[in-house]
Length: 119
Image (cartoon, rainbow, N blue to C red):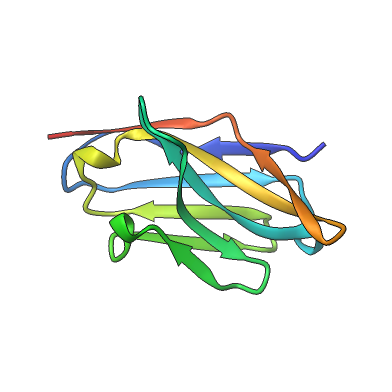
């Protein structure tokens, strides 16, 4: 069973910064991609940022230029640095790991951490 332990999050004023971290028990070799999703009340869960096994990154248009995702393979962690936060960034943020399974992958989710940005 793959475990994900998230940290960070909290309450910040608009324009401020937060850093999310996620440690996973999945081995580096088994990871297809790792990243962060978010879900605001009444909305679908959406991709925020992710890193593939090859190191390429993918960001939601709404966070490009403000958020930076990074991965530490030695520690099996992924970090999300969030700068210039906006009230619309308020959501529960979930760490996601996609582990390889045959020709596909299996999704694993963290418990979620609340990010609240006040105006």
